[in-house]
Amino acid sequence: MIPYGRQTIEADDVAAVVAVLSGDFLTQGPEVERFEAALCDVTGARFAVAMSSGTTALHAALAAAGIGAGDRVATSPLTFVASANAARYVGADVELVDVDPSTWNLDLGAVPTGVDALVAVHYAGLPVDLAALSRSGARPRVVVEDAAHALGASTPDGPVGNCAHSDMCCFSFHPVKTVTTGEGGAVTTNSPALADALRRFRHHGVVRRDGDPHWRYDVPELGYNARLTDLQAALGTSQLAKLDRFGVVRDRLAARYRDAFTDDPRVELPPEAPAGWRHGRHLFVVGVDDRDRVFEELRARGVGVQVHYVPVYRFGAYGGGRDVERFPHTERVFSRIISLPLYPLLADDDQDLVIATLRAVL
Ligand SMILES: *Cc1c(COP(=O)(O)O)cnc(C)c1O
Image 1 (cartoon, rainbow, N blue to C red):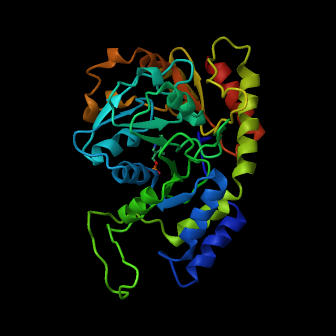
Image 2 (cartoon, rainbow, N blue to C red):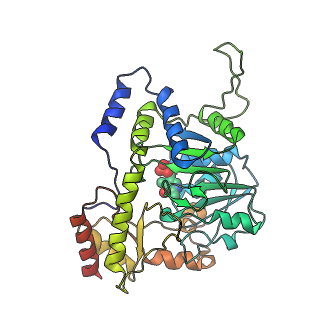
Image 3 (cartoon, rainbow, N blue to C red):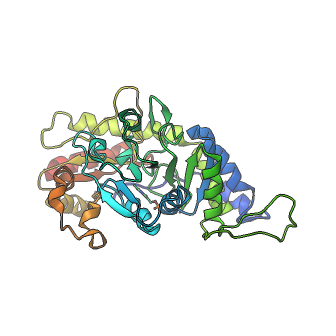
């Protein structure tokens, strides 16, 4: 089966992890700070705080921003459920907003007035136009980016992760994402206060005062163990150095899919980034009629496609599809989407096979 996504691990990635194994620190050592510095370099943010997963990064970001019970958090229903779960972890209410059919991102014009926070998901790697949100004057008090798909993406305001129009930006380093640490995540921000709050969240709420003996600390508020290990951080630093190279390959593969299907009316191509923007290219999602049949037949023929995503409002924990009619655009997109294989190690021959198989099935 050709998978829809997979990691690219090279000999120097392996060596980086093995070197940590024979060193002094498997966790809480120097590798996490090195990884965070590399993330700051790549994104242009002042601070990066590594976390144990992308989900935990989202949880930490909302907690650090002081979002809690009684607050309303808007996000897209066309996302991995973690984007919404994060709001529930801190006791907030989730307000799902229908997608814009021209971007498949949440429709910024439909965000209810008075929400306390927005979790902006850059679906498939296409950045949400947060500059437009800032200009509109309707920016919620807290804006957190879910950039699990968008490491390496950029807008005219610079790389996603520089927080030009957000408070914090969250990344995931799960193996299907652009670079991996196995499990892992991070939050970037330009705010020293938020960076401190994120570090407290990650380490049990522990606060140390300058000049106190090494054993003394306070725990003024609840925290967690949300740490990334040094093994993972070393892998992440090694992987981040390859981000540009991986991005070039992903761009090239996406262009090959576009060329293959551009004149085929049976295949709806995904929204493209505007001129001057860079797409993150996490997923290559096409729309087809009769999706369920196409999905089954592709998998039966060895093409490991996936559906990203079942909309959040269809899950039991989010109403079980009680109010699908509030999301006409998401419903239409959901009924048609299929993610084609896209990852740096996908050989041209295998991609040609994917293209030919999709044509045959259609
Ligand atoms: C992968 C992903 C997450 C969660 O990241 P993990 O590292 O798997 O916890 C959150 N949001 C989106 C959009 C994702 O794709």
